[in-house]
Image 1: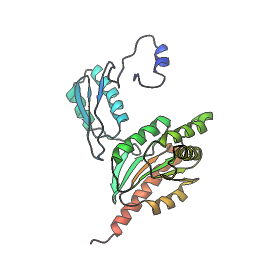
Image 2 (image 1 turned 90 degrees about the horizontal axis):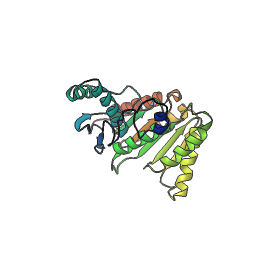
Image 3 (image 1 turned 180 degrees about the vertical axis):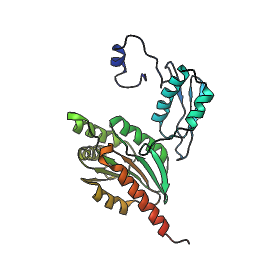
Image 4 (image 1 turned 135 degrees about the vertical axis):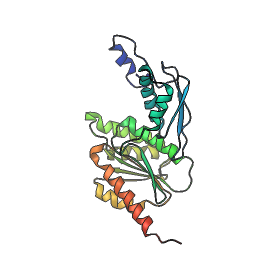
Length: 254
């Protein structure tokens, strides 16, 4: 178990023995994080139990996930060398932080699923990928987080307030309770005196959002897609990538 996970103490109280831990510096399988590089194709390096490992998946949360897999592999008797070979083969499925540059636009497609924690993790990774770039804009395209029960509006509002702390030029929300995220985001920026920093737009359906984004996205921009899978944001992300490819093909050589 990861002791940094919310509810860790409650979970431990239900066990009949002490769990083994991973993902933190003082865990049974201690993790030493290196600062994730911002380059799109950067290799992340980190240490578990003093051994160095590397892989190409973006995001600090993926390093923590990898450290859990490493802990299991070590307990099963695999050598660090075998684990390194396995990590080198690791690839994310579609919609899981897929990063692609098309026509000078950085597309970050994390549209497979979403909850408050994974939303923040995706924004943190997106911020790392954007780095200190001064050209182009940071654009977040967010759909609602579903299956949150009676607390859905509150979770969206809380997330909107937290996301106001990130450097974002355009926020686009699509459908359902994502409007509460958008409203809370705008209110938080107003409270911070930063209301002019970000353009915020809400759409109720994907088709109108597509029309806006197809006209708005420009070379040099960086775009994050994140929502619960049922929203269908993966299709929108794919269509916009194809629009960018078509624009690139139609651009004459100079």
